[in-house]
Image (cartoon, rainbow over all chains, first blue to last red; front, side, top):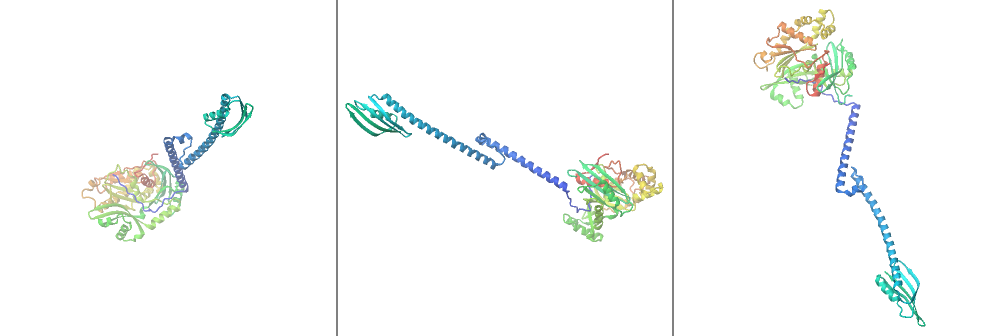
Length: 192
Length: 343
């Protein structure tokens, strides 16, 4: 048998909470809210980390710390990117400097190779180097050639300039005679 | 602090005593936290309520149940056309209340009514209602709150509260329930689990029996009650008093109850309602009343078995009526009949 006879002749009471209970409930709600926030943040962080590691391995390799806050992550990526750009510029500059240095060295090397070959291949009688001025773009050479036969310095310089892909420009050419001796004053410029 | 714990406080009164219990509900079991009784000298005296309140120390968040005494309420059976009744269902209670007011001829704003049972019978519905005056309720609530109790969540009525102690799972679906309490006797007629009728007699009560016992024993009512509760008193002495006082009056009331219940199917009453249960605050009183009814053979339907009602109570210390209210509160909170924890 099941019967339920319940009388309540006073149904006006509105149940109230004590301040202590209210505060405990409020605290519980706040803690629950914070816990949920932490839980979802962690979940988001793990999801993002997983996506970033899978889709953008370079970001992971760069050591950018992924957090649940997307804007902060983007900020970190941007900052790291700027830093890398700066390092790139610095390296480019160093590379350019090194390249310039090597170019200069190469020009000098070419000039002196040409002079060395000139010295080796000159089979005339005598020559005296009067001046040698060079810059990265130009080598200006002045010399005296003393010979009783046909002068050959200018001709040899032209051959060597062609070999080293330089343009030879004659600046001065004076020939003096002293008996049988011919004295030729020659000034040429060699440009790459 | 009652957060995450359920406490029920019940306070009850009769002409002898004010009693209160604060109990904790745990998994359909009631654990008594505090229990107090205070002897009542004068019905207007608030001191026993204050004393009980200070002893059991109710919390403002407790589920509080009070009780209106039997003399402050009226049970009525009212018949109304089924269509009229159905038209009031789901609407505001005012329509039904107005009908009740018209039936019994009182001002609708002066009372509160609650339907206990609806008995359909063809085109007519009979309803059993309990009625109390609004001022009585307000005064009682004010009396309790000014004594220190929190505002009650529930205001039960005395004759119904004892039904919460009956173990309905073991009881017959059709039965008489005879409640013998300090200030009244209530008779309920159930058929197929439905309450068909209620009769309350204020003249037949345990207080009168205690007075008679006190005369026999040469003590006062309170001492007589204490002796009954403690089980020290010879049952034959109680039986002598009870046999002379209750059986014939109860028999008369039972006859009246059956006669004024036209919805009872035709046939022998003992076939329809095979058992009559006795409920009282003290198991000793229940046993003695059962014996008195059997010995005097006064029950109007001889084949009806008279028994002590199966009870969910396993009391070591009988109380004066707050325990049934706590059980009712527990039922409200746990949605099922509550069982008091042992010990």
